[in-house]
Amino acid sequence: MSQPVLYLKNANIFQDNILILKNLDFEINKGEFFYLIGKTGSGKSSLLKILYGDLPLIDGVGEVVEYDLPSLKEKQIPFLRRKIGIVFQDFKLLNDRSINDNLLFVLKATGWKDKDKMHSKINEVLTKVGLQDKGYKMPFQLSGGEQQRIAIARALLNDPELIIADEPTGNLDPKTSMEVMELLNQIHKSGKTILMATHDYSLILKYPQRTFKVENGEVFEVVHQQ
Amino acid sequence: MSKSFEKYQKRRLQASYLSVVLSITMVLLMVGFLGLTVLKYRNLSGYFKEKVSITLYLKNNMSDKQQTELKKFLADKDYTNKIRFVSKKQAAEEFSKDIGEDFLSFLGDNPLKSYYEIRLKADFVNPAQLVYIKKELEKNDFIEEAAYDAPLVDLLTKNIKTIGFWLIVGASVLAFISVLLLNSSIRLSIYSKRFTIKTMQMVGATKSFIRKPFILGSVRLGLAGAFFASAILLGICYKINHKLPALALLEDVKVLALVVGGIFASAIIITAASAFMATQRFLRLKTDQLYF
Ligand SMILES: Nc1ncnc2c1ncn2[C@@H]1O[C@H](COP(=O)(O)OP(=O)(O)O)[C@@H](O)[C@H]1O
Ligand SMILES: [Mg+2]
Image (cartoon, rainbow over all chains, first blue to last red):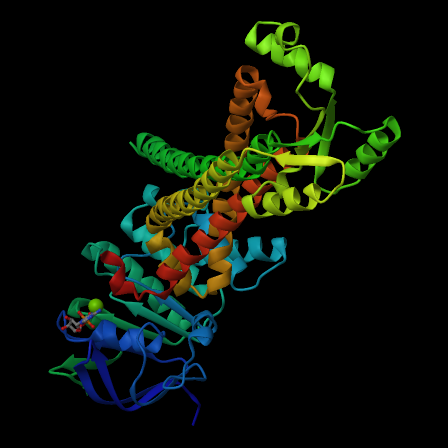
């Protein structure tokens, strides 16, 4: 058995002292693709925030990319996030600088020093998402789908062990959603582990993967009828 | 469309820089003024205090030798700033001039005494010291009386104390208010970047890495403010010096250098500390707390 990239055991998740999800038990192994589905407000984002350290795990045990969650220190959070690529519904690009500078910032912030290596890395990830000629543009000069592809490129910069995507197609029209989905699918095929929250069932039908459902404060696996 | 948006962004950015530089300039100008007043205040009070003199009326039958000896004795005292000797004859002439009449001609004899007038050093001008000095001098065999204007000394000492006290209180209050003002304008400029800060944290940047450019940026604006404040302050000093040369504002290069140096040092300390605290605040917040 391979080592899981992440697991939670007997985890209870709180927001403002209110129990949102109870008794979570699940794990994801290297190379797997998981959907997390559920209505708005069901707790998908809260669960993902636990995994990237934006919400502390107070009750239960768990580990993400070899970081123990209950004992996670504030100081460790940046280093945990360097091993995870995070993609948000609202892209979260730095709007005060160009695409190249967005990517350059991440590399510099995570300890890259060699200029040539940084430029070839940026070129590599932009090519992967098909936007190698848009590096000089400002984020607001790109369409939503393009901005999300840039955000995915950014998530790939440090060769993450896990990609967490929180409704990455939530702000996109169906056609663009499919393009972004196709991109994530390719990245999965290249060997990456992906956990993606969504409430768009059409995506799941088109790209079926193992699926967890969040409902009434519980998380359980959904078995697809083939 | 994107071009006009860019222009708009640029103008907004420039406006926020301008407001930070402006408030820093104001703060530093205040700091500079207070520093200058406090430093120059010593000179100013000294200037008045050193006008206080003590007059030593001499006994009539002194030989020249005794007089020179006494003069040397007085000159050696550590409270002596300047000594002036006025002979019987000079005293009579001065007095005649004052009353506009040659009183010797109808009095026949000169009843006035020769005297030494000692200008004191500022540090010794206070009621207690003067009482002591008077007593000590009157022990001398050749001195009939040592006299000074006691009420004037009282008034001078008391006023200088109260003025000094209020100056320090005023300086502290103004400095405090100014720092609050600056603090809030720096926080506002960083507040507008709170989502950027949060995103930076999401991609794995450490707090100190995120903080650094904000602190450097604020310090750079602070140095610009320090430059303007120094220029304005020196300009005003130049003008005042033109009108009131007695204050000798421009004479003491050391004081001016100290004030300008103080302005630059305060600029760096205040802006760095304030940017540090502001970024620290937003670095601590969770994503959901940013929308307030
Ligand atoms: N910062 C917060 N403080 C308090 N409650 C929150 C906060 N964020 C989310 N919640 C609550 O937690 C529940 C789950 O929210 P969320 O995880 O965002 O759901 P989803 O991502 O599935 O839409 C909701 O009831 C929401 O009101
Ligand atoms: Mg959500």
